[in-house]
Image (tube, rainbow, N blue to C red):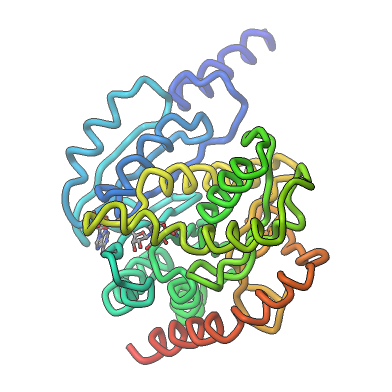
Length: 340
Ligand code: NAD
Ligand code: LMR
């Protein structure tokens, strides 16, 4: 009899999870800005992630089509589309991870900070709703300028009384993805075996790749090569903005990077050990209140913010050079959140 009960409960468990045979807990992921250039391929990648059981696609327009399209993929995640402010609550309710790529992208000649005036308000509105409908969710902030939108989100959550610094992340994974690709290409190493930490923030000189800590180490690169790799990583976003010539910024590589980071968050939530990614989080690694560095992810989000490790003189200089801009961007975000 107990064997029968056991197999019945297993069947029920599987059917609730769309016949998934894995032992992973149910997880709801919401994407805000899901009909956009990043949102659509990110929706695709989250739909095929076996750790996702429910995928909520929210935007101000276009989500019924994206949701219908993605929902036909024969993977377990149940997809629902939500459109407009009156559906935002339902879109968010019960979310474990909320990914935010909502907002305008750059055009050639613009800095990420030029997006502040539009995107700050969008992020503030969305985070106000997150505080109300899913205050315990891990928030993956993609909307630029990340250096300011993360502090805005923190202030909104503080005001709502829901702030947990372990649950707010600026997504800087694309900087790591680029640093890995460029380093492996230049050093002639297999890209899938390469790792490069990237610290600081997510704009220009605030992006600081630590090639001295890259693995596997390479002794074929000159100091000139390292300077060029650093600059290319810092200018990676601009390289794409210019190549797209007015049609937006990185979307496909960003969707990939966003999916990698969200997957790491889900694994951490599910108790998988040793999940480490770089992310822009509340930090005491430097004197700045937010800073990107390696972070260990766990059941509550950030388990541990890891230190910088040993920096060489070039990296030490890069660290000093980025502090002024990053400090200003953080203060701008905090001021906006308080003033509006
Ligand atoms: P996009 O214009 O193609 O898409 C943005 C989407 O956001 C649109 O579908 C739009 O309708 C939606 N949107 C606007 N206001 C909204 C609101 N209040 N609620 C929900 N959705 C809303 O832009 P994109 O190329 O997808 O880029 C989105 C953002 O991501 C930009 O700010 C861009 O700079 C940023 N970005 C960040 C990184 C990173 O590494 N963190 C990388 C690439 C792009
Ligand atoms: C990127 O790094 O690709 C994004 O931040 C988008 C941009 O504006 O460069």
